[in-house]
Image (cartoon, rainbow, N blue to C red; front, side, top):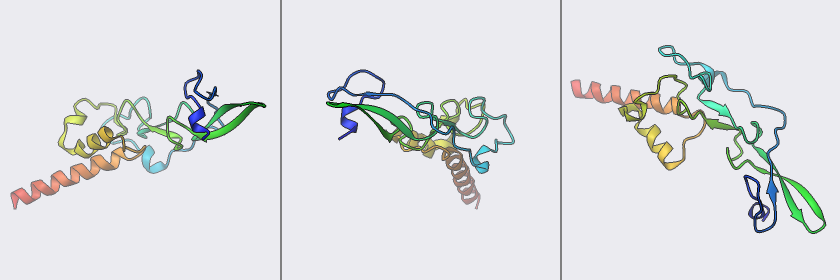
Length: 149
């Protein structure tokens, strides 16, 4: 297929193809529910507390313009962005998607167990980390309440 003849970071593939990024239309807006930073800590400097950043490869469109070299000339094709897998957004690499500035020790905390599992398995979606941390805190509170009862 078309993807097998493309190479992501320039250079030649088996089909002699070359790919390049195109930013069309700019970034997608961040939902207000994700943009609100945690009240207890200052927001992350990279994402502003949203926990997600715009994909730098596609500019937030989720599309990647690739040149497929054919016998009769070059053909431009739009394919799914290989960096964000068509979402247009990435998990913030500084705050791990939590939106918090100080993440020292975050991955060792008991409420971050599910977040660490998702990161390890590569299934953490942009905008999902805050909810996972909240669920983890709720589970810990329930266990503490059960232990007291």
